[in-house]
Image (cartoon, rainbow, N blue to C red; front, side, top):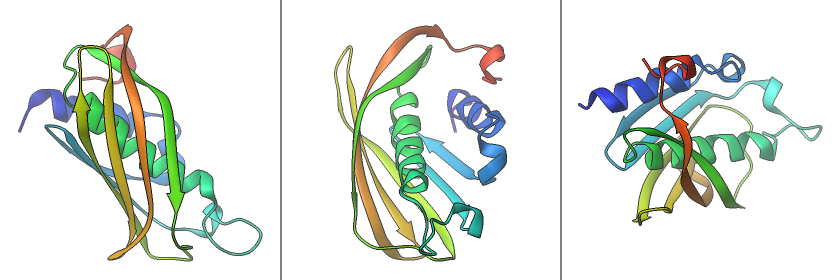
Length: 141
């Protein structure tokens, strides 16, 4: 297990937005898995999980898969596409992200979102290393 990956996990979990989701994360080289329990606070008016929650899970797992192979810089999402395949009304959601392409200045990662063992969405994103160095101020410790 890489110290870089553990520091990224701690950075992710320390982000203020994650107080809402109480997620879990596991990062390895070129991969990241993010999970959380579905609560009613994530529902839209029709009683299913809002698409913004799908996006967060897919983007987070793809983002940290990309981050796992950049040892010194904060990466940023340039674009992200997602496809919804079924609604979620409860249980646990988890997203599995993986890097599928890497060049000097661009990373492409895909992610699949599951509710239990059923696939509920897919996404892919483009990510670039930023000028921001990974540091303790970002929670990278």
